[in-house]
Length: 582
Image 1 (tube, rainbow, N blue to C red):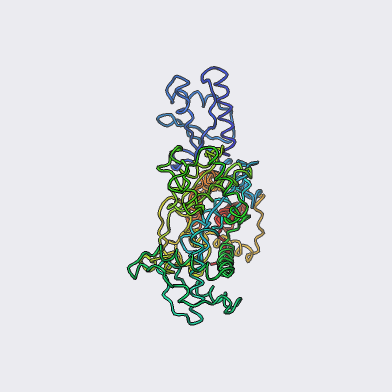
Image 2: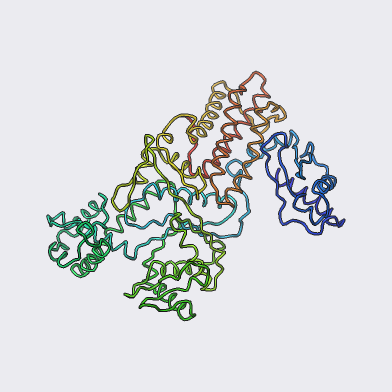
């Protein structure tokens, strides 16, 4: 209906253009669902937009637009609201036609081709493979997966990608942490570094090293710690201490260092892949940071930037002139020890992304990466690509609450709730829904007790219960041997207030899906489904569906079946199931 109304408006505006009332058609005619029933079903601000070029008051232009509208059975009446909005009241037949459209389209209802022919690369989560995913990563996973679903629903071809940070200092710290736990298993007495990874999973990986290599890489603790600078707890520097242990471990282990590293990353990455798959998050590509180094792309990209005078040398290090592109300071790409920084790999990675020819390159990052945006866009511009082609969406942290108290978490100390533990406690459905209930850039408090509750205060339960109720109605119809013939129902019988409200809510769905996709805001769909469920529950409580009047029964069953279909379609986009009983 929205598309048909827009076509009517464009026809009207084209007539005014031909008469010289306006001199240019708008790029898009905005048409929004109204929240207040007294304002009709749809409203447009097009008269306000074009009043200046028409050189008249918005209300005057609105009258001219209405006068040029073709007669249509879609509209029962129009009204002009100050300062120049045009409100459209749809006919009863138009409102009820959405039921037929839903029943005919079924699982495809809500899909569109807005993004047809456009390819998008969506990178999200990309957590360092130094431990299992925790609840903080879960928000980015749910958000990214839902954005991908929504974009595909409106026609985009989307590839999901995980950037595996399998190179650099953090991976060295992980390897040393595993190696030290490995030595402890054989009775070597040593003090575990303050800056090492402390979680129990490190001990489990060390046992895997033992299972694969036995005592092959066993070394004496004295050999490893001899002349190593003091750790923080002993009055020293924890960063210098762990760095010294990294250097020493590489020296004493030789090829064994890579062997320990490989067991560690294979174990953690395998766990991450399984965890995400079980959470309903699929990736088309897993991209290795180490591959950028092994292929020489990180170095060649840096060389190119240096040759084009975007990089200069200072204090033995190489610095990228990111200040030329609005960054607050220049950034190091190669340290004075010759090692490329994470930023150098990031530059090469984004060049590689752009070279793949996507129409959209979208990164979903944690909010703590906000400072990286300017420097990454600077590198894209310096490499002669359009930085506006890169869209960066930020996801704020998720705070976990249990029993009204905040759960404290620290990845390095190993004190955190894993995504797997969260899923086991509240279930995938509640986790996926709660994670996308807020705008991604807003902080969110995840209430475990609410997520597990079987009450109407729990939004995912409330929505799923609406679906289960409809399934119950259909089962009752079967028990009463009522043959459902929704496709031939007389929808003109749907005249109750609850029916009109539900019809109007159903007609909003397509617009909500499109808006959620194009604005990267899945919370719009989450709140829509909650509103739809509320409409249905009110209708359920106010009107019996299986009545003596067979025609009315069929009409009401058609309406609830259409409602069921939209609930299923919307929940599916959010990665949430639609149970038939609860």
